[in-house]
Image 1 (cartoon, rainbow, N blue to C red):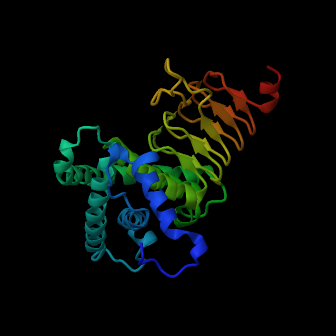
Image 2 (cartoon, rainbow, N blue to C red):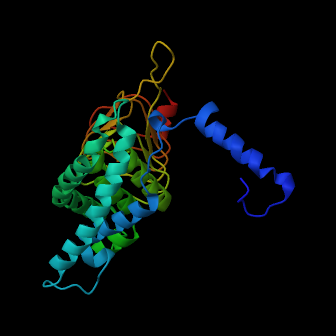
Length: 302
Protein backbone atom coordinates (compact mmCIF):
# COMPACT_ATOMS: atom_id res chain seq x y z
CA UNK A 1 0.00 0.00 0.00
CA UNK A 2 3.00 2.29 0.46
CA UNK A 3 3.88 2.31 -3.25
CA UNK A 4 0.96 4.49 -4.36
CA UNK A 5 1.80 7.67 -6.16
CA UNK A 6 1.81 10.73 -3.95
CA UNK A 7 -1.76 11.87 -3.27
CA UNK A 8 -3.23 14.01 -0.49
CA UNK A 9 -3.71 12.10 2.76
CA UNK A 10 -7.41 12.97 2.92
CA UNK A 11 -8.03 10.70 -0.11
CA UNK A 12 -7.57 7.73 2.29
CA UNK A 13 -6.31 5.73 -0.67
CA UNK A 14 -5.11 2.69 1.27
CA UNK A 15 -8.48 2.24 2.93
CA UNK A 16 -10.40 2.74 -0.29
CA UNK A 17 -8.23 0.22 -2.18
CA UNK A 18 -8.75 -2.31 0.62
CA UNK A 19 -12.52 -1.75 0.65
CA UNK A 20 -12.65 -2.21 -3.12
CA UNK A 21 -10.75 -5.50 -2.79
CA UNK A 22 -13.25 -6.74 -0.21
CA UNK A 23 -16.07 -5.68 -2.52
CA UNK A 24 -14.53 -7.60 -5.44
CA UNK A 25 -13.57 -10.69 -3.48
CA UNK A 26 -16.27 -10.99 -0.83
CA UNK A 27 -19.26 -8.69 -0.45
CA UNK A 28 -20.16 -7.93 -4.08
CA UNK A 29 -18.39 -10.64 -6.05
CA UNK A 30 -19.84 -10.98 -9.58
CA UNK A 31 -17.10 -12.77 -11.51
CA UNK A 32 -18.31 -15.46 -13.86
CA UNK A 33 -18.07 -18.71 -11.86
CA UNK A 34 -15.96 -16.82 -9.35
CA UNK A 35 -12.74 -16.83 -11.36
CA UNK A 36 -10.62 -14.11 -12.94
CA UNK A 37 -10.37 -14.51 -16.72
CA UNK A 38 -9.15 -12.52 -19.70
CA UNK A 39 -12.00 -10.75 -21.45
CA UNK A 40 -12.19 -10.31 -25.20
CA UNK A 41 -10.67 -7.00 -26.28
CA UNK A 42 -12.88 -4.45 -27.99
CA UNK A 43 -9.86 -2.76 -29.55
CA UNK A 44 -8.52 -6.01 -30.98
CA UNK A 45 -11.98 -6.85 -32.32
CA UNK A 46 -12.03 -3.52 -34.15
CA UNK A 47 -8.76 -4.54 -35.85
CA UNK A 48 -10.22 -7.96 -36.68
CA UNK A 49 -13.32 -6.38 -38.19
CA UNK A 50 -11.15 -4.05 -40.28
CA UNK A 51 -9.28 -7.09 -41.60
CA UNK A 52 -12.47 -9.01 -42.35
CA UNK A 53 -14.01 -6.02 -44.12
CA UNK A 54 -10.82 -5.74 -46.18
CA UNK A 55 -10.85 -9.43 -47.04
CA UNK A 56 -14.48 -9.23 -48.16
CA UNK A 57 -14.11 -5.99 -50.15
CA UNK A 58 -10.37 -5.37 -50.56
CA UNK A 59 -10.31 -2.29 -52.76
CA UNK A 60 -13.05 -0.53 -50.81
CA UNK A 61 -11.81 -1.09 -47.29
CA UNK A 62 -8.03 -1.23 -47.52
CA UNK A 63 -6.19 -1.03 -50.85
CA UNK A 64 -7.57 0.85 -53.84
CA UNK A 65 -4.44 0.04 -55.87
CA UNK A 66 -4.83 -3.75 -55.93
CA UNK A 67 -4.65 -5.59 -59.25
CA UNK A 68 -5.91 -8.98 -60.41
CA UNK A 69 -2.40 -10.31 -59.80
CA UNK A 70 -2.00 -8.97 -56.27
CA UNK A 71 -5.48 -9.17 -54.79
CA UNK A 72 -5.45 -12.84 -53.72
CA UNK A 73 -2.12 -12.42 -51.96
CA UNK A 74 -3.46 -9.37 -50.14
CA UNK A 75 -6.66 -11.14 -49.08
CA UNK A 76 -4.68 -14.15 -47.84
CA UNK A 77 -2.38 -11.94 -45.77
CA UNK A 78 -5.10 -9.87 -44.11
CA UNK A 79 -7.17 -13.00 -43.43
CA UNK A 80 -4.25 -14.85 -41.84
CA UNK A 81 -3.74 -11.97 -39.40
CA UNK A 82 -7.43 -11.44 -38.69
CA UNK A 83 -8.20 -15.13 -38.17
CA UNK A 84 -5.26 -15.67 -35.82
CA UNK A 85 -6.43 -12.72 -33.76
CA UNK A 86 -10.02 -13.94 -33.92
CA UNK A 87 -9.10 -17.39 -32.63
CA UNK A 88 -7.60 -15.85 -29.49
CA UNK A 89 -10.65 -13.66 -28.92
CA UNK A 90 -12.93 -16.67 -29.40
CA UNK A 91 -10.85 -18.60 -26.84
CA UNK A 92 -11.28 -15.82 -24.30
CA UNK A 93 -15.02 -15.61 -24.93
CA UNK A 94 -15.55 -19.33 -24.41
CA UNK A 95 -14.83 -18.97 -20.69
CA UNK A 96 -17.93 -16.83 -20.36
CA UNK A 97 -20.28 -19.28 -22.03
CA UNK A 98 -19.13 -22.25 -19.98
CA UNK A 99 -21.14 -24.12 -17.40
CA UNK A 100 -19.97 -24.57 -13.83
CA UNK A 101 -17.97 -27.60 -15.00
CA UNK A 102 -14.80 -26.03 -16.33
CA UNK A 103 -12.91 -29.21 -17.20
CA UNK A 104 -13.29 -28.31 -20.87
CA UNK A 105 -11.13 -25.20 -20.40
CA UNK A 106 -8.05 -27.23 -21.32
CA UNK A 107 -9.57 -27.78 -24.75
CA UNK A 108 -10.56 -24.17 -25.39
CA UNK A 109 -7.59 -23.50 -27.67
CA UNK A 110 -8.59 -26.39 -29.92
CA UNK A 111 -12.26 -25.43 -29.82
CA UNK A 112 -11.44 -21.79 -30.63
CA UNK A 113 -9.40 -22.89 -33.65
CA UNK A 114 -12.24 -25.15 -34.80
CA UNK A 115 -14.82 -22.35 -34.50
CA UNK A 116 -12.53 -19.92 -36.33
CA UNK A 117 -11.98 -22.44 -39.10
CA UNK A 118 -15.73 -22.99 -39.48
CA UNK A 119 -16.27 -19.24 -39.58
CA UNK A 120 -13.54 -18.81 -42.20
CA UNK A 121 -15.22 -21.39 -44.43
CA UNK A 122 -18.45 -19.36 -44.27
CA UNK A 123 -16.89 -16.12 -45.51
CA UNK A 124 -17.90 -16.65 -49.18
CA UNK A 125 -21.51 -17.23 -48.07
CA UNK A 126 -21.37 -14.16 -45.84
CA UNK A 127 -20.07 -12.09 -48.74
CA UNK A 128 -22.88 -13.34 -51.00
CA UNK A 129 -25.45 -12.18 -48.44
CA UNK A 130 -23.75 -8.79 -48.11
CA UNK A 131 -23.78 -8.37 -51.89
CA UNK A 132 -27.53 -9.06 -51.87
CA UNK A 133 -27.88 -6.33 -49.22
CA UNK A 134 -25.85 -3.90 -51.33
CA UNK A 135 -28.04 -4.61 -54.33
CA UNK A 136 -31.11 -4.01 -52.17
CA UNK A 137 -29.71 -0.62 -51.17
CA UNK A 138 -28.95 0.26 -54.78
CA UNK A 139 -32.47 -0.64 -55.91
CA UNK A 140 -34.24 0.71 -52.83
CA UNK A 141 -32.67 4.16 -52.58
CA UNK A 142 -33.04 6.48 -55.58
CA UNK A 143 -30.23 8.62 -54.15
CA UNK A 144 -27.68 5.79 -54.38
CA UNK A 145 -25.25 6.47 -57.23
CA UNK A 146 -22.81 3.56 -56.98
CA UNK A 147 -21.86 0.41 -55.09
CA UNK A 148 -18.85 2.28 -53.69
CA UNK A 149 -21.08 4.97 -52.22
CA UNK A 150 -23.31 2.34 -50.61
CA UNK A 151 -20.38 0.38 -49.16
CA UNK A 152 -18.46 3.36 -47.84
CA UNK A 153 -21.11 5.88 -46.87
CA UNK A 154 -24.31 4.09 -45.80
CA UNK A 155 -24.47 3.44 -42.03
CA UNK A 156 -27.32 0.98 -42.48
CA UNK A 157 -25.21 -1.12 -44.85
CA UNK A 158 -22.23 -0.97 -42.48
CA UNK A 159 -24.45 -2.17 -39.62
CA UNK A 160 -25.69 -5.08 -41.71
CA UNK A 161 -22.14 -6.12 -42.66
CA UNK A 162 -21.25 -6.20 -38.97
CA UNK A 163 -24.40 -8.23 -38.35
CA UNK A 164 -23.64 -10.75 -41.12
CA UNK A 165 -20.14 -11.39 -39.72
CA UNK A 166 -21.26 -11.58 -36.11
CA UNK A 167 -24.37 -13.68 -36.75
CA UNK A 168 -22.17 -16.42 -38.21
CA UNK A 169 -20.02 -16.36 -35.07
CA UNK A 170 -23.14 -16.30 -32.89
CA UNK A 171 -24.38 -19.49 -34.51
CA UNK A 172 -21.03 -21.11 -33.78
CA UNK A 173 -21.43 -20.48 -30.04
CA UNK A 174 -19.67 -17.20 -29.13
CA UNK A 175 -22.42 -15.03 -27.55
CA UNK A 176 -20.17 -12.70 -25.55
CA UNK A 177 -17.78 -12.08 -28.42
CA UNK A 178 -20.53 -11.07 -30.82
CA UNK A 179 -22.07 -8.70 -28.30
CA UNK A 180 -18.79 -6.80 -28.46
CA UNK A 181 -19.16 -6.67 -32.26
CA UNK A 182 -22.79 -5.60 -31.93
CA UNK A 183 -21.84 -2.67 -29.71
CA UNK A 184 -19.00 -1.65 -32.04
CA UNK A 185 -21.55 -1.48 -34.86
CA UNK A 186 -24.09 0.27 -32.63
CA UNK A 187 -21.63 3.00 -31.65
CA UNK A 188 -20.52 3.50 -35.26
CA UNK A 189 -23.92 3.50 -36.97
CA UNK A 190 -26.69 4.05 -34.41
CA UNK A 191 -28.23 0.71 -35.45
CA UNK A 192 -28.78 -1.96 -32.79
CA UNK A 193 -29.24 -5.46 -34.26
CA UNK A 194 -29.12 -8.41 -31.90
CA UNK A 195 -26.90 -11.05 -33.44
CA UNK A 196 -29.45 -13.77 -32.78
CA UNK A 197 -31.96 -12.23 -35.18
CA UNK A 198 -32.52 -14.21 -38.40
CA UNK A 199 -32.30 -11.96 -41.46
CA UNK A 200 -32.55 -13.31 -44.98
CA UNK A 201 -30.94 -11.88 -48.12
CA UNK A 202 -31.60 -8.47 -49.65
CA UNK A 203 -31.94 -6.57 -46.36
CA UNK A 204 -31.70 -2.77 -46.45
CA UNK A 205 -31.85 -0.19 -43.65
CA UNK A 206 -32.23 3.28 -45.14
CA UNK A 207 -30.65 6.12 -43.13
CA UNK A 208 -30.13 3.71 -40.25
CA UNK A 209 -30.04 5.72 -37.05
CA UNK A 210 -32.23 4.45 -34.23
CA UNK A 211 -33.20 1.08 -35.73
CA UNK A 212 -33.54 -1.70 -33.12
CA UNK A 213 -33.99 -5.39 -34.01
CA UNK A 214 -34.50 -7.88 -31.18
CA UNK A 215 -32.90 -11.26 -30.62
CA UNK A 216 -35.70 -13.51 -31.87
CA UNK A 217 -36.86 -11.37 -34.80
CA UNK A 218 -37.16 -13.21 -38.14
CA UNK A 219 -36.91 -11.21 -41.37
CA UNK A 220 -37.59 -12.70 -44.79
CA UNK A 221 -36.13 -11.76 -48.15
CA UNK A 222 -35.95 -8.17 -49.39
CA UNK A 223 -37.13 -6.48 -46.19
CA UNK A 224 -36.60 -2.71 -46.02
CA UNK A 225 -36.58 -0.64 -42.82
CA UNK A 226 -36.24 3.11 -42.36
CA UNK A 227 -34.74 5.06 -39.48
CA UNK A 228 -36.03 4.67 -35.90
CA UNK A 229 -37.92 1.43 -36.58
CA UNK A 230 -38.18 -0.91 -33.59
CA UNK A 231 -38.79 -4.65 -33.88
CA UNK A 232 -39.19 -5.34 -30.19
CA UNK A 233 -40.88 -7.44 -27.52
CA UNK A 234 -44.33 -6.61 -26.19
CA UNK A 235 -43.82 -8.34 -22.86
CA UNK A 236 -41.21 -10.49 -21.17
CA UNK A 237 -42.51 -13.84 -19.86
CA UNK A 238 -41.49 -14.81 -16.31
CA UNK A 239 -41.09 -18.12 -14.53
CA UNK A 240 -42.85 -19.05 -11.28
CA UNK A 241 -40.27 -17.12 -9.26
CA UNK A 242 -40.61 -13.92 -11.29
CA UNK A 243 -37.38 -14.33 -13.24
CA UNK A 244 -37.36 -13.48 -16.93
CA UNK A 245 -37.49 -16.53 -19.20
CA UNK A 246 -34.58 -16.08 -21.57
CA UNK A 247 -34.61 -17.18 -25.19
CA UNK A 248 -38.38 -17.26 -25.67
CA UNK A 249 -39.64 -16.12 -29.10
CA UNK A 250 -40.85 -12.59 -28.41
CA UNK A 251 -40.04 -10.46 -31.46
CA UNK A 252 -41.84 -10.00 -34.80
CA UNK A 253 -41.70 -12.13 -37.93
CA UNK A 254 -41.50 -10.10 -41.16
CA UNK A 255 -42.24 -12.08 -44.28
CA UNK A 256 -40.69 -11.37 -47.70
CA UNK A 257 -40.80 -7.88 -49.25
CA UNK A 258 -42.09 -6.06 -46.16
CA UNK A 259 -41.39 -2.31 -45.92
CA UNK A 260 -41.57 -0.46 -42.59
CA UNK A 261 -41.30 3.33 -42.61
CA UNK A 262 -39.62 5.69 -40.16
CA UNK A 263 -40.52 5.62 -36.50
CA UNK A 264 -42.77 2.56 -36.62
CA UNK A 265 -42.80 0.24 -33.59
CA UNK A 266 -43.69 -3.42 -34.12
CA UNK A 267 -43.91 -5.44 -30.92
CA UNK A 268 -44.38 -9.05 -29.90
CA UNK A 269 -44.36 -12.39 -31.69
CA UNK A 270 -46.62 -11.23 -34.48
CA UNK A 271 -46.37 -11.80 -38.23
CA UNK A 272 -46.28 -9.08 -40.85
CA UNK A 273 -47.47 -10.74 -44.03
CA UNK A 274 -45.49 -10.68 -47.26
CA UNK A 275 -45.45 -7.51 -49.34
CA UNK A 276 -47.03 -5.46 -46.54
CA UNK A 277 -46.22 -1.81 -45.91
CA UNK A 278 -46.23 -0.36 -42.39
CA UNK A 279 -46.44 3.42 -42.33
CA UNK A 280 -44.39 5.89 -40.32
CA UNK A 281 -44.93 6.14 -36.54
CA UNK A 282 -47.32 3.18 -36.47
CA UNK A 283 -47.56 1.24 -33.19
CA UNK A 284 -48.39 -2.35 -34.13
CA UNK A 285 -48.98 -5.32 -31.78
CA UNK A 286 -51.22 -7.54 -33.93
CA UNK A 287 -50.43 -9.67 -36.95
CA UNK A 288 -51.45 -8.44 -40.39
CA UNK A 289 -52.07 -10.56 -43.52
CA UNK A 290 -50.03 -10.38 -46.72
CA UNK A 291 -50.38 -7.27 -48.90
CA UNK A 292 -51.55 -5.09 -45.99
CA UNK A 293 -51.04 -1.32 -45.88
CA UNK A 294 -51.12 -0.09 -42.29
CA UNK A 295 -51.15 3.63 -41.55
CA UNK A 296 -51.08 5.56 -38.29
CA UNK A 297 -54.70 6.65 -38.84
CA UNK A 298 -55.78 2.98 -39.06
CA UNK A 299 -54.06 1.98 -35.82
CA UNK A 300 -55.45 5.01 -33.96
CA UNK A 301 -58.91 4.03 -35.09
CA UNK A 302 -58.75 0.57 -33.45
